[in-house]
Amino acid sequence: MDVISVIRTKRDKGELSPEQIDWVIDAYTRGEVADEQMSALAMAILLNGMNRVEIARWTAAMINSGERMNFAQLSRPTADKHSTGGVGDKITLPLAPIVAACGAAVPQLSGRGLGHTGGTLDKLESIPGWRALLSNEEMLDVLDSTGAVICAAGDGLAPADKKLYALRDVTGTVEAIPLIASSIMSKKIAEGTGSLVLDVKVGSGAFMKNIEDARELASTMVGLGTDHGVRTVALLTDMSTPLGLTAGNALEVRESVEVLAGGGPSDVVELTLALAREMLDAAGLKDADPAKALADGSAMDVWRRMIAAQGGDPDAALPVAREQHVVHASESGVLTTLDAYAVGVAAWRLGAGRARKEDQVQAGAGIELHAKPGDRVTAGQRLMTLHTDTPEKFEYALEALNGGVFTSPEGTEFTPNPIVLGR
Ligand code: URA
Image (cartoon, rainbow, N blue to C red; front, side, top):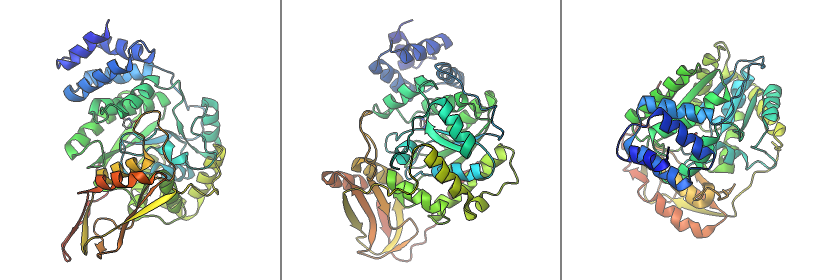
């Protein structure tokens, strides 16, 4: 088998054979297929797609590229959630402790920022001392002792996805349904969770810009999960505007802690509780009450123990960026557009995300929002604050926001999108 013929098959809109798929995933994992060859194939897949049979085989090959975990020894049912990625999507941070406080075991193998979207591990690494990399034994220990663990997938778990995910981030090949579905589901199936709730984001800040594509992605992933014996449910949720009032690593940790303390923005609380209910249902814990776990502080207790078990100090001050720039409203009226993609790209340019796979993210960089769509604003009022350690990036970030913020005249009727768009 040679890689050029595999690339040509997909470039010419052909169907990859099971043998081609098994070979190319294995050869890429072993370093026999080079990054530039895999990026050509990823681009051909993005442009020409894969059918369900190819996607199932691609996913199986990624699972088989590494080990499979098993949580059978735990006394609690396992429940996991995965988001397809958005702007300001910090939901995993409050969600995992809430669901754990309700009696499930939550093994959250999470990722780093991809494109303009943030990554859970990048966010948590802004907590001094916190470690994303755990051995399988450490991961099981944290899960067993606290009920939840959020960590990087170990090197042994779907290593093909690890390489491909980092490559797609820097080659413009993220937004492909077959690649997203197989990336997410290979990790989740290999991880061995009993149930999985998918948060499929829809809108400008998501990889899926319209509801039809999001539905297609959701049904592809639910099909893959079900075929591998994982109880899988998907919610379609709005990503036309950022979730909550922050986009950026430490800023989002701060907001998540506010939610765990019983406050925080209402959209973040609403989506966290909706996903928690789905996870508890899927795990067979229908009578558990996630809102109570927030209100009585038990979710906060799990958070503190989980962070400490991974070396973090839950009481440490979070990093703050060296420089701030405030954007003011230029006119009075109703804020009708605060585009998630524009905010995501601006936060990324400020240093919250990476341009090359070896880049470090800035913990304090990002954007703090002072108004959301539907709010009345007055000319001169603060709309958002940009944070960065590299102030020469302000102009570049402001360019990304051009056209992404729109105020309609006073009295305009405007109803923000619901958070949950479908199930
Ligand atoms: N999350 C993943 O794990 N993979 C993708 O491709 C996109 C989001």
